[in-house]
View 1: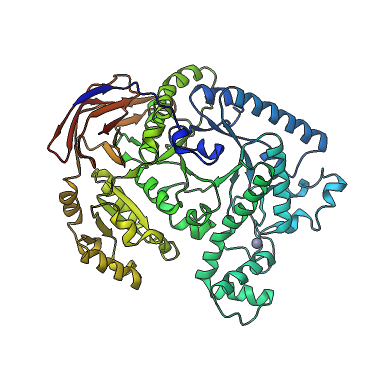
View 2: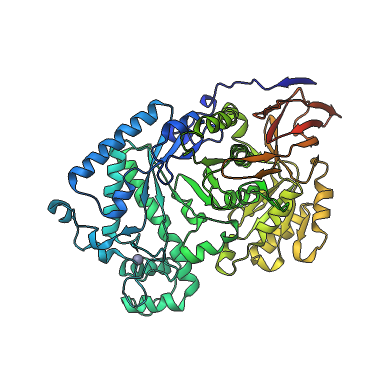
Length: 596
Ligand SMILES: [Zn+2]
């Protein structure tokens, strides 16, 4: 057995023949996402680049957009400034600058179109006040944000035309893509004529009989067919994004489009679809990648010993993201400032879960050098390991079934609870949503994972048949509500594949490539002391036993940005290889890479 330390530089990407340049920038490890502004601190491209970020989210002309545009000379000036800023960002190493556009907000409606030149105004038939989302009575719905906000309807053609103007301004000034914030539908639903027309077509496609196709008739149907109306509302942002993306690509064929997919806490995974039309399964069909903004689940240990983590949520998001890259902000207590080791842990946790982290390198000047110095090594380690971090599949000792359609019926996502238990137990699993629930996806290679289902009652008739077929093929199926000791059975069955002996705050995530197995080890036992300080409680003697899907192991190497560096021992036993690795000390994160 060869024992190697770090230092493994890769000639990246060419081997993968990445289809599009900008899309390639989203690959895990290569991408370091960052917001460049927070409160009074803005335009932090240089700090972002210095800390290792490669993709920044800039204000662009977003505020001008949601305020209704300043006078033409002021707008021209802002555009020129944005272009200069982007040029500079690119020159210091930022590869993509994504501009902000709000998908629904109109702020201060009374002055929204005050500065519009006559030729611009002539492009619109109706005033902005008529672009608002409408209630059942056809009157504008008050914004659920309160204050000066009014919510435009993403289906209103004139609002879309206005949004396209802002998109054009941003792409023209050099932005590489657009981040749409707040693509939401009023909690009561929008009953405007444009939404009703689309709802009618939605029902027709589903072969629903339409007794009365008048506006009032469709509004009545929306009230009668509540479930259908909710499902339709979930498609509004999706269709809006498709239109905006096609337009952005007509200006720059490499332009990327994403949006705020919300998910402010994992607990709203189902309910946000119903409450605000934030449906990741729908939106991820038409955005280039999925960005979520969690306010509280940054990985760490609280003073009372409670462990916070985002790993289980990453698994659920992947299950409904149509293979699109997943990017997350995970905050603690709603604070956008994160101390250095906790930022590193969040970056490593994202990478372990085939995702990328968004940081906020918006530090006051006096904190900047220390934060840059602390984050850079983690960003460098991840970017050097692009080949190891991508094109992997999660080790699947358990296939956890996610009937995502249940958002229509319940707020409680039992699958999230199950994923959390599996993650805590370091059982290796993948979440499969209903659109991948078939034997082909379940079988994957020679081994059959344990199929874990929350309850028989969530299965359709076809899915019940599939489960029987799976059992006939030799697969184990555990129905959680009928099997109180399901975890013990799962643990016993997955033991031969992977086990870790470590304190309960260590997480292990195993990912396989055809010729490589990667074990991500994360120490969640880091306390947040303030916005700038944290305290690591290192884990000691972490022992990993991992079976690898190739004949003979020639090398095990480890990568970390931890200060204590690397010390580990590895040995392989038997012909079908079981590798044992012991790590005397785990500070924040270490990757073990096992190769034939
Ligand atoms: Zn509408």
